[in-house]
Amino acid sequence: MDCSDLRNDLLDVLYGEASADTRRRVETHVASCAACRDELLAFGAVRSDLQRWKAPEARPLLPRRSSFRLPSVLAAAAALLVATGAGLGLSGSELRFEEGRVALRLGRGPSEEALQRALAAQESRHRQELFALRAELRAGARPASVPAEGDPLLQRVADMIRESESRQAQRFTASLATLDERSEARRRYDLARIGAGLAYLDGKNGQHLSRTTELMGYMLDASEKRGER
Amino acid sequence: MSRTDEELVASSLAGDRSAFDQLVLRWDRKIQGAIYRLMGSEEEARDLCQEAFLKAYRGLGAFKGEARFSSWLYQIALNLCRDRMRRRRGRTLVSLDALEADGQAPVLREEANALDLVEARDLQQRVRAAVLALADDQREVIVLKEYEGLTFQEIAEVLDLPVSTVKTRLYRGLDRLRERLVREGVGAPVATEMSAR
Image (cartoon, rainbow over all chains, first blue to last red; front, top):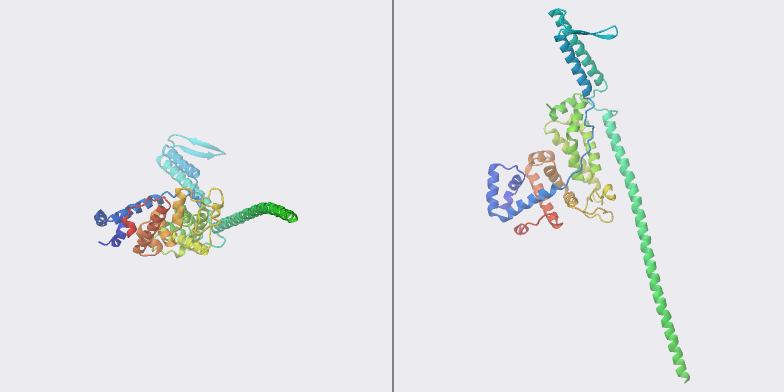
């Protein structure tokens, strides 16, 4: 089998998507083909290296709690209310709010029928209260199947994008200014070094010239004196 | 029992805005992670992720349900990344984060010189640089396979390509990565007969 024919199967094996037949075919081939065997090992090593690149923890775009979920405190309160009402009803007790105070009558008093009526009335009241709670919370939501331009979600996201772009632009400007200063400082430093070097050479040349002049003067004097003799 | 993506899409189209919130909560980290691997910048990943969900929200009515919702979302994210990279084509680019001391973001093109303040100090930086140096089509497949864990079939759906093409790009991407990581002393060289092929 040609090695290039096996390439797709090799990838299936590498990523655990090979069928049993494919796996057997690849295993048989790599047992006798060192190149394919090495390639499979090398790609396995690459995969391990790739996993060393860890992405930073992504910041969620939305708060983890949905704003439209019934708050758990209210849900617990509603559940407690229902449970209390049902319990009192079943025990033959009665809970009333009379003349500005809560009155609780325990024990069996009224008949079975009256109890059933009282229980049903309580359940109905509790359902109405829960319904009212949900309606109150939903009153904040605006039904919209088509997002409009003034849609708060769109507006919020658009604002976030604008803020981010503004921050990036400011940082880019500040960074360019810093680079500019560094380049200018470097340029002046280099010029200063060149100037110092030239001055040094100038000085060296000056000394050399001075010595040369002195020597020539000496030689001229010497030749004149020789001529006089 | 949590609702499926398709159920949440249907609810959202019916006017339940909290349903779309649920989709965002479910997918924003994955999408941000994928964009981060493609672009190399945390800030850019967040910006493009916001844009992706904004586009998805606006275009939800056009989502036909023929593909998975997640595949559609990945497509939107990839297209945004491609647009952003296309706009940068031919320019040397260093993420602004690289100008700070931590050198977190990489150079996105190898030939960056004067502005290349990021040195690959450790293995993670070198791996990131190797991935970001891949050709766009190879990098997309590597990211979706290695980091997002999509199957070949799912990647083919996202990229609208045959599975065989996906595998070819993945093979070439892995080969390029292998060469580069070995050259940089990260990967272990593997003997002999491979180089003769």
